[in-house]
Image (cartoon, rainbow, N blue to C red; front, side, top):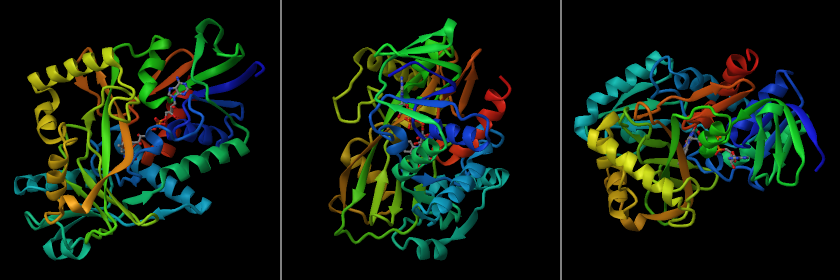
Length: 406
Ligand SMILES: Cc1cc2nc3c(=O)[nH]c(=O)nc-3n(C[C@H](O)[C@H](O)[C@H](O)COP(=O)(O)OP(=O)(O)OC[C@H]3O[C@@H](n4cnc5c(N)ncnc54)[C@H](O)[C@@H]3O)c2cc1C
């Protein structure tokens, strides 16, 4: 490849990188954009391996960045999906307290949703049964979110990639290693070619802290990956769930708990994901890509969190850290659908890894999205859920607050 120059290099061809490119093009800020993607296909990591739920803005702390961008992002993505004729299942979501003592949490969630301008209704037993006849009725109350939808993430990623390439952006795939020359604002690829950039945007998901460290940015932050295993309802099962069915989450940790997601397109109901310590950022199988030294330091960090019960970490461990064991996973699913049996479900091939950020100085989990600017670079860290839903609005936020100003 010959030497190139551009206004923006975007590192990472996931939903965050692609929507930033889309918005730079649509807003006519620049056409000289190069996206670097280390894989030969797009959507190989988190953006192609998630639940595909377009969230409706319920869970997030009011005034957080997540709360600001989730609803506008979801509205924009839905419009774009319609314009492109892509698939979407506007089926809504039911949030039920899986145990009677969790019922008061519904009021906290409901108040948050209202503050965030999310459309929600508190419904009673009769209405719950109409939506999911087999649902666990603990307190007779549940939250109904009519604006939650389910999409096909890979279809969206591929369509976005086509659309931005048609508008002039370049996507270079299979660029696994590159070297930064900070003084020359350029990177050198393995084949020796040089890409000069005006501004570098780090949207590299699970690797985003490592890429930021290359720029000497965000040294106090580290991603610890958590593995999301999915199960699915067998075709021959009695179970037919037409809406998303979620438990009441622990609002201290950013994992929403095992839930049921209907995907009408494939006639599939998926259950999950778990949130297990993953021992490697791309360790999708059991021991395929374990990063031993990192895994040891991640585990010792997590054990310390447990000992200090930092961020209510003990509750996460008790409720979620061992759901890799099938009988515990089934128990979590039975808290939503009591009649579901082991014979009704099977392990799915889908596995996703969450890029959860921790601050090593404060020893705290980072809950919100985090963007940090360098002199000619912007780093998107902690692009966890609902970054897929929020992506278009998050891209505009990044452009307005970090790119145009810088
Ligand atoms: C199990 C699970 C379920 C989820 N469910 C939902 C949901 O239902 N709804 C929702 O809104 N969100 C959900 N999320 C979150 C959502 O999937 C992510 O927030 C989003 O996909 C993050 O996108 P990204 O572009 O930052 O990362 P990615 O999709 O991981 O993209 C980053 C890209 O950067 C590339 N890359 C990395 N390093 C380099 C490098 N050095 N050079 C070049 N390229 C590089 C990678 O190959 C990758 O393609 C879920 C996440 C998980 C893990």
